[in-house]
Image (cartoon, rainbow, N blue to C red; front, top):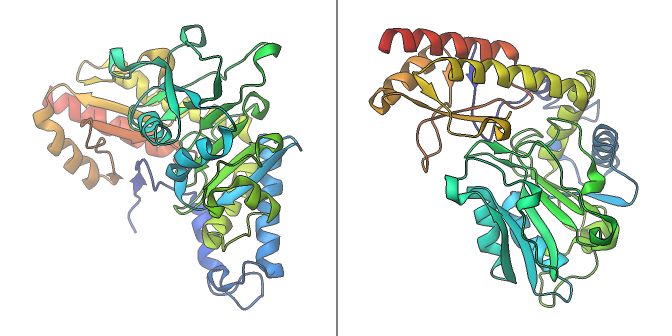
Length: 364
């Protein structure tokens, strides 16, 4: 099979070693005679898989003991509703930082349950930067503050975590980290709740992980469906209903692969190098442009445009012929987008950069 480099924003590339191990274990997991897909989620075999995954995630991210780790279904989009359902308590307002399309989706869903205060927004510059914390205009009566740490579509990323004085620590910060979790070290204590869809840096689609400070659970709004109650999932160790077992298994293989790479500090350095290779070319060549403010550029999702949009289809066709696939930008913004998640090897970025140089030279 010819080498393919998959730059999809999600579902996204997985480490080759992980796919090979999953292939080898497909019919018989560790001598059990069963595929993971066939196992009872309450059996000892699968119990060991999910317990190993939790332990590995706690080690990789350094999750404190007073935070619960949940493995749920519904993707990150389910959390747009679960967060206000669980965290509003007796309050009626929540603060949201608006940095692009995914934070916009979270805002729209939250408005079904509470008053939303847009504490800061980068809409004035077409969502090409992250408002600094001193620009936030928070509501003192807000139940929580919500942000999207990496906007997958717009390519805007927080390279910092919010920090509040002691008298403001009672307002939890909630973060959607779907597209940059596990790409760098993380101080979990800066947040009350973190959620992330799996299909970018964690594993396959179908799983969402939630990291929640234990004191924030147990105050669900009246009328909330049982399955949307964090405390129910905490009480049942993510087994209230059948969890997405195979997605959990693959995610477990990914976390073990990450540990073999040296953990999050090591993978961050690799991600910095990969992103720098592509951004340096874009900035050095008038043929390509990236609209995002330099200090807020994402390492995970790099959007760029060609000097002449009429060349877009030719660019995509020729890239695909060279094994560089899924480079088309999101339908809402157009252009191109290269997603450089943990599993994208440096060689893939090198090949993309070389192709882009050649294409620009021929079509300038």
